[in-house]
Amino acid sequence: MGTENFGDGEFWGRRILGTEISLSPLTVLIFSDIYITMENLKRYNRLTEYLKEKFGERVLKICIDGGFTCPNRDGTTGFGGCIFCSETGSGDHMIHNKDISNQIKNYFLSYKSSRANKFIAYFQNFTNTYDSIENLKRKYDSALIDDRIVALAIATRPDCINEDIVKLLHSYTSKYYVWVELGLQTSNDETGRLINRGYSSKQFTKAVALLNKYNIDVVTHIMVGLPGESESDLKNTVSFINSHNIQGIKIHSTYVIKNTILAQMYYNELYKPLTLDEYLNSVVYILTHIPKNIIIHRISGDAPKNLLIAPDWNSHKKLILNGVDKIMKENNLWQGCHISNF
Ligand code: SF4
Image (tube, rainbow, N blue to C red):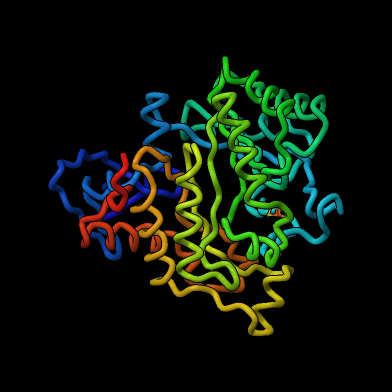
């Protein structure tokens, strides 16, 4: 029996021998290492399903290299960047081509564009609001050149958000669904200093308030397993997030990749990655302690295999997805089930 994933890496259905099947609520499919049920699919709000509901069909991301840098690398707030960040500013999966419109055109010429009819222009690596307003507008406009693009997603840092930038982003909301991804990683500013993050949790709060003011959706990045962090840090970070009006969350595992300060720490035995079980339990803690309306954009880090040093399990995304589903199903857990105020 042949199987093939639907979805952009995160499964939400299966195809068997090329034939789509519909799953009844009680259907259980057992494969060599994967089992899924309709129940599992609803235990937390996945981005793929949210977008499908919002746009009536599957929507895919086009990852764009906007040619940005980061204030944490060019000396404005620091040098060297966050200790886990690669030389590409966490954009290791991307094809780097300076001309933004060409990146879009090339995407639509490739086989990838045949997998959907609607797309998100996603400015992913480095700090995608770190430029003059004129340059930002020019860069965003250069990406929005095809009618099939229905959304604009911008990844950035809280200290690179101001009202003029938010106004610019807001100007796109009449035509596009716009969201901003804000790094937080942890609410513990001590850890923030240790990882050389270069901004405070207060700056995160300020940036979220500005984006809320203009009704722009906020997706927060958090990292599990940062150096020196304990279970109580994770709990504090979740409480901190819950005190903000955010619409989405990206949960990343902390992984060690080549040519980073974290790699030096790892080799000097100053950093020990979490085990898979520790990570799965942490993700389940987060999912069960955040409001059920928050959209879960991801629950794993996406380390490039050729750069990954540790942990090994990080390159097996399905182990993470299926592991979380399994724990939630076995314990009858749901997103937000451990908070009572909604
Ligand atoms: S803020 Fe982002 S791009 Fe800048 S150094 Fe940190 S992880 Fe890298």
